[in-house]
Image 1 (cartoon, helix red, strand yellow):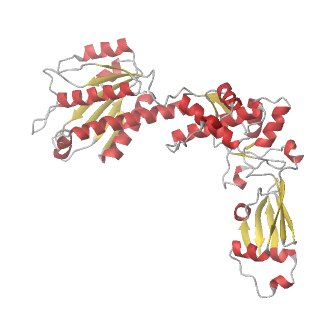
Image 2 (cartoon, one colour):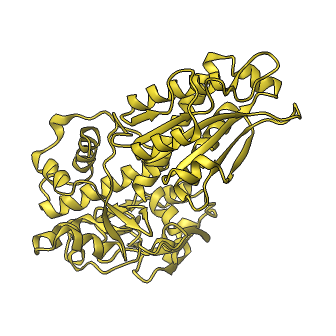
Image 3 (cartoon, helix red, strand yellow):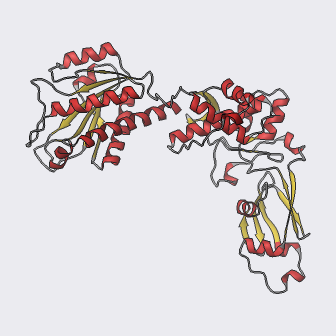
Length: 432
């Protein structure tokens, strides 16, 4: 893990678990925090808070380093790594909290929490406050003479004895809403009419890892992998590829092929644009920017010269890249035809996935038509023996698109969004 994410993981472990917990429990939390971060990267929702390194204990760094690159996976995707302080005796099934079944979030017994009295709590609530919290109308004189069931009545409990729904002054309230509005520590609660007194056992929603239980199991010689596999059902603890935030394409080899060149002009527009010049311009900027992101990049031509198809194939085979990116423009006898399109060779799933990522972002960011990516019997793709995408980045026969390719800012944006698509592809690949 690069230093930026190492510090972030350690900082979040410090915030979310007591520093004096057993090292195996801290390792569990480190893997959970890493899993949450990598899932956020995949969903493009990662927010990095400011980090005070002085706040991070050396034992926390040890837990992070001892679990380097490990995340929790289910069916080749990082899990929703729910955790809570103390379950009170058993964890919960996801459908009782999230209203949907998640195969790895199954309730399990937690004997350690049954014995833990430190998380038992009592909260007293005035009846008027209770009715106000849930916007319930209380009949005049009702509070002068009542039975407890006229105020609160449990309608349904889950198998693990958590409140699923409750009647509040004859109004049905979901247990999770009730617990949240009263700031109760747990859905496992009881009550009696002293004002009204709520008894909670445990702290948190009860999903996933129970931190108190994990710490007690660690004291009893459980390893982090055993603990995680106990609280998350049928998961795999996997090592993900390194992802360096400063050089996210480090060790990735890319070959760029600017179409045409020399006496081979390619297509041209009515106002004098020539395909070979535009493809070279885009390719040179793309090469420079990819190298800034850490990629190893080769190119079939870096000036206006003719390079035969066979020579291009030979150069690509010798370089043996992870990907070929071939840059071209298109032309039609119909001026209205416009948009970007791409081709991959039959069976090249990675080429297809990369092409889709790049084209979707180009289309969305530049507001241009996405004509799709499809299998194509393109000679260069067939012969090179590696993954590749053959891009047609626009139509020189279309007035608006030809005008765009005269704009330096537009060309820079094309390159920037192609790289964004590449980064998204490799971030997704890293996680699966």
